Image (cartoon, rainbow, N blue to C red; front, side, top):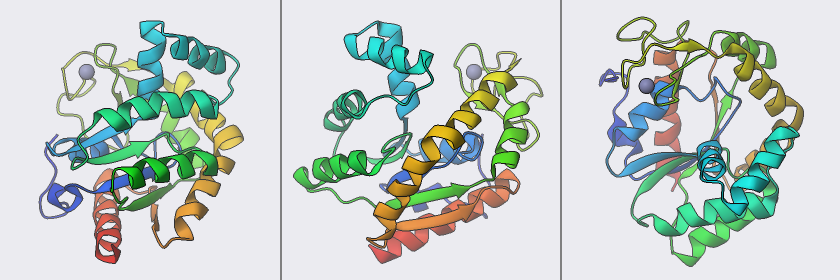
Length: 234
Ligand SMILES: [Zn+2]
């Protein structure tokens, strides 16, 4: 979906290397889409990388599937192995917005080492603030596209064709139960690790926290100014 150029210029995120932290629903599809509209920047979701491994039935995928089945976080060894493959196969000049990794301080240290060994610098980390109640309310409304699996929050974003995927026009289906599970998992098991990731970047002056509870357009404005403030500090 095109983004209003008055409120957000995707160029502001061009080549930025960002860590995005927050519960499902806070990381808005349109924020991610506007990043992905840049050829030189990609959105990378650790969840999607894990899911690809599971679907390909790789040994790493089998370990991801076991963690998912028991509602545990994927172990550091497995997460690092999956993400290492992505990191070392990308162009070092290409920007990224990475979500779902690092999930704890140990993983953040590993990512620091990878960046350093390729002489790359992170732009910073953006924390998307959303309360548990708001995140659960968002989650209840979530729709998913059965074809391309992207998620939509119809109460906060205007779909080009109501009830249909903005990317491929497939009819969307309700996904509230899965989404509420993911939000609960995030707050019960992942939020603590995420806070330690945030403090890791905060200590180095690389953290910006933004309110993600407003409508998507204002979230985009907040996001743009967050990226700008991080880029200025670099
Ligand atoms: Zn779709």
